[in-house]
Image (cartoon, rainbow, N blue to C red):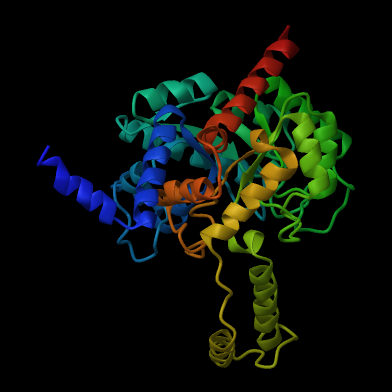
Length: 409
């Protein structure tokens, strides 16, 4: 008993906030022990390809925190972040020809599989919700694949079917460009949503059991896909448009459709989609760069890149980027949950897809527990945290598998 008295005194002397922080950490740990945390979108494979070239096949991926160009992802930080499964994006530039997009997509899929093969104690390739759970119980991180752009199928259902055979779990219908069969959120529309062939793509995704991903697409494309699909959809990395009126985000009207569909919006961390102030600053910064030097005809310092760069640096110094925070990401999560319901929200960070420009407190894959703890501080129950962390997307994966079975019968 005497030995317990100093411990009791220390606990009583502990600041209440510290005691609560410890309680939240313990709760997060309990939730993530039973429910795999699943991120809908991480661009690590593409970042490795772009920065490391051929070295990406053999380099040590355990700790990349000291690299000159900072990564958001490595094995050590995935473990600290208690990640249970990850949809790895196999994005390639939509500016490439269709054939080149297919070739590079295959290379990206190969890289994801290679990483899993090289680190079998850490990673496991998975396709189904049960395989995700099995890997999680074994202490391994499930590797899922997301093809981030409809242009990557080069207009071919056969290519789409081949990606499915190779393990792709979702197709993002468009990326930053409007393509022949679907409008993008960030390009001029051509189809007012999906064409008839685009609707066939959605139907084929249902038949294959692949998820329909509506991040990056126009609202018209969102609505058309939701009207056609027989399975729940995902938004692999998007925010709430009511909080930041970026066309990449999801309006309340579409959130209501997502609720009816049974889908899930996985909330993004990219500052232009999180913060309206940052979105406006980013537009001003881009306009200033164009104002200074826009060859071949425009710009105050046209043809003088050094002078333009110096003037732009001075502008940036006088107009610093607005601060974006973990709390603002939590605001988006809460808005989606209020409008669509806690059964329809998830996490889709976009790590290693937006450089090192991330919200304060969400700098890398080690920070998921901090975000979940913030939501607990706001009153979220452990059951709802489990849904957000991975339960909702597992439910969607199971539903897509059922639809696949029904369509095959």
